[in-house]
Image 1 (cartoon, rainbow, N blue to C red):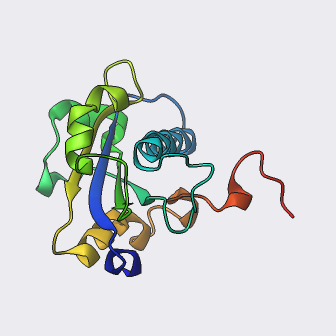
Image 2 (image 1 turned 90 degrees about the vertical axis):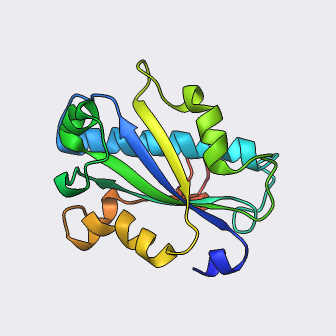
Length: 172
């Protein structure tokens, strides 16, 4: 909530995946990697030179978690509900106050959907909705499987990573 008070714009992201083979642990890890790849693609559209930018003040932020189909709120196609047992991801994306993106995040994702998702890519669809009034409710929605103890802390994806967690960065 502090970031929102500092001018970050919150969005609810939904990541729908194409079929992934393997164990539950392996597909969760692959999905987390795809979420990180999406973040990286968005980062280069938001921050001019991510290597030189201040990770704490100029980067967008993302907290994402796996979720499963709930029949009472069926908003997925039949194909989406069957693929991967209905497993998909939700995330809260915080757009920084200063961005080089000329449009809103939801419009950017609609316009560039083919760069993120498609039949030949791991993602079937990426969707973004601005959160205008119910930030706490949206955060609870994204983290509901964690709260229900269906997933552990290791299944959460929190980005950006601190420098010590990034590959190729030596730990002092």
